[in-house]
Length: 459
Image (tube, rainbow, N blue to C red):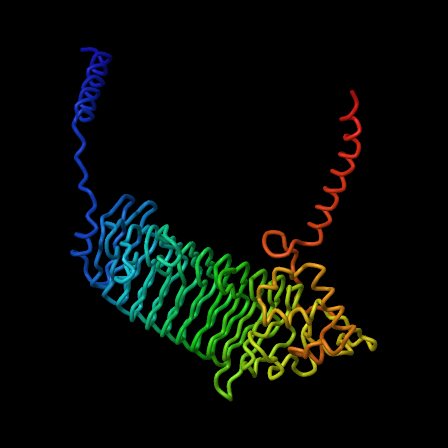
């Protein structure tokens, strides 16, 4: 038999074997059963969750780590919680968790933790009433998650993140959209930083939570930016608090809190930049605002007349419709509007600096006849930017008998803003460049119309 023939026969046999092998049905791969994998896992095990939809609810009663591959989804039934954690030292990472129940009285949640040191990282929560809820879970970490609430009226939503009786918790790098609040309640020694909270009710809400560090967060388009209530030793630094409007519309609200430091925050285009009620409470406590930008708010700072021992220094009050308001009858003279002969910058200061030391030679005093009327008749705010306001204040200056008593006085007003207001284009007051551009457009339109109009009547 020739070598050519043997070669041909060998190729034919190989092809037949390959054809038979290819024709065999592939062995079906058993679907991944996450509940079974959890039941079989030893404490401390790491379980990789493959892409696909894995049914909930899940109960994690041993310390394990769940790491989701791209597309791994834990789907609830639309009733109750989706993931419940009762063991310490559990980690959830890289998953999508969705479809909790909608019962507010049962506080249905996407992820609820009942044990210490729960870590939730890079998880996306969708269609959940409460997003991530810690209940007696101290030492936990909630980091780099995205939380979407259910599409409900704001009063019917749950909190995107709620920390309850959980000390030493880190809430970092999360993006919360359309929830009710992000809450730290009865939880001490917490850190809340690099979060973005928008389109909710209270961006950050603290109650009975002491020793909190709140820094580098963005609170945008909520009803309230940050509300601090019944706590002490609270530090707010480098937060962007913008366009918070609603029944209160506070950028920062203080209620019965002690020893608060607010530094280097941007508080812009809110209804009220800062609101203070009985803060500080105790005689040896203070509240301090330094190097903050308060710009383009309807009211820069509003305080009850009983409020005292607040210190404001090196802040920029830039073009607030009303720089200072008293929420009641009285004044705010028992607060300190300067420190170490350094006050604040006021964009409406009409004084001068003859010696060139950067400090105004006359005190800044908030005393507007129109603003005094606002305290009695808030509905007059509708005239805020009208010529009637200027007429009232001009008449009061012409007839000093009508000039109201100043609400406050800054003895060392700064001539140059220590914090510069950036041009406002997206929210708040438009920038000067915007107004110039708009004026040029209107002027060009007028020129065009003036040239076109005569020809329209020519027959």
